Image (tube, rainbow, N blue to C red):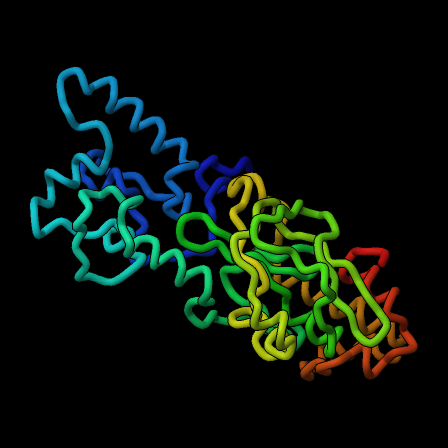
Length: 305
């Protein structure tokens, strides 16, 4: 059965209390759900509505959703755009006539989100490994979490952190403004004299680098899904960049298959351990060095180095 365009293109991962499109909130359209995590700059619906309103501008001065909000919420009752989208809780009033580029509060929110990891994620368990809900997972064991405005936060999953328990970053970690390309070796991790390249899970421009994990890699292992994030990226494309990543139940199935693959490396006598439900060791390589760093990196990070 062919999937509908709506379900196929839905961007998942960032949830707000209300996800109505700003055009709906402004009272211009009866119903439209935002599937772009309020990244209006890349939204085709927003561009289309703006074009339509401009054509109607000959008979009306209302051209965008902000024009309607200005009329709907007059004076002191004008709510901040971030209250309308559910990014923050009321009360917060707009004092800049919805010209967010002039607003220090708008910039402050962006700065906070670039430095903080947000709320504590909910987890599922797959063969003893934590899998954060509403995250996308790349085959090279990095994750992507979509945030307000279409930004993407990137990090390592619990599986790879347990596999290379004492891994640290090498000095080639990307800087702000650098670009990463999905599926290409982008940065490296190391343990003792061993080094392994890591594939980027998404294409885009680096907006922020988590200096805390660079200076203290232990954070990666203790909290890989929250405080252990590595980059915040401005993705090249939201809808096209996540189609081949694991999400939801598929991510659980994938981790379980990866665990079976790992146990088979130990030998036939370990192949049935996946069903026991035991907790995986914290440093698989450190406890099983004979398997080989290069073999583990090639199998699970999908890189040769």
